[in-house]
Image 1 (cartoon, rainbow, N blue to C red):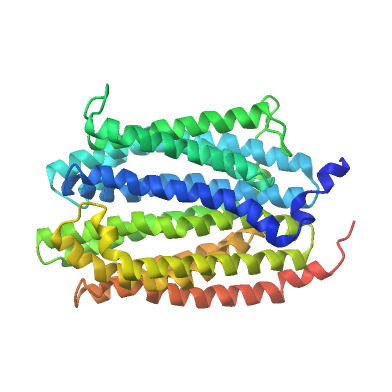
Image 2: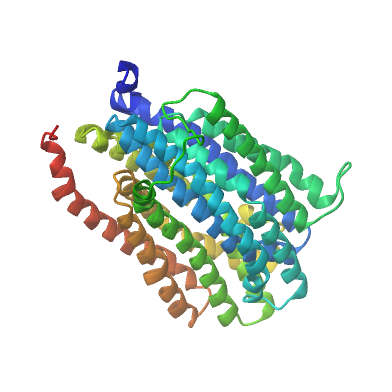
Length: 462
């Protein structure tokens, strides 16, 4: 292999500018994504509270699709970065090609889910015909035409694994901008477009995703990169799929757990809400929170995207010092971002709720809920940083166990127990769960240091 390939910046460049140069584009693009999610819900809320309720109920199944897309792509990203760090360039290219093929297969799965599962899923949470119709229409569109989302995510993670963070940033911004422009036009019927309401929001979403997909595929196939995708001589290899899903499957589970958690909280609210008005208000509060918290969490996930290939590359290159340096920077920057987010939710909750046309009851219930949930933000910064490390070095199961503990084993039972006393205290389940998950993360890290990372001090046998 050429000397140029062996001198990848992830193994040589000063760590702070390296992390910033790789993370800032991802953080910026994730902020744009978060903004698009918020704007999308703001326009939907203008139709009425039932429309916002419908999108909130549809979101968990939409999250499952995103979970499969992102989780699989994380597995591909980790494998490519480790193979590049070990200078096994052909294997890195083979992993990238497998990623595109798996992305298409994943889309076909969600075509079936969109057709057959959308309405039964929504019917679990409401018998309101208007909400049921809105939510089913939205889900069917975003799942059946999810090819844009799934393939573009795979392309972005593939390039990020090589250290290219600019093209993924442009890809995400392109899709978000198209979506934001089309949202009001298709939802409210502006200019030449018909008024499609919630259905319009879904169509705007998939058009933006398709634009992202077309752009990233043109870049992948027409430009030169450190990995080369070639479908002409492609042969499916079970060993490659296994290596992808060693990290990818736990990442999928981690993402899907979020969907289960959201559905579980909605079910708890539906079971313990005193009146229909209170139930719908609390579901809207949680739906609004989930959109807004992305504005805080997405930059941290962008930081994670930028840091993960650096950690994976240096783990593959057996450079423990640089691997630890990247982790420390990730912890520091993530902590600062989450602290700012905590302050925003503590002091700006009334304003945040007002963005979504929230009525008096929703604001009354939402302000204390936002302040309680945001107590988990700073501990979450540490947990996300350790999860990034675990995934980057091929130990994704540890990240999965953290997520299971946080969102299923601790959060939902705690929420159920607290809700029996009052829905107002249900939200304390979030900081409780995050604190326990953080303890688990620290123990997992200590174990990794004492075992796997010690081996990096031993010269590799040629």
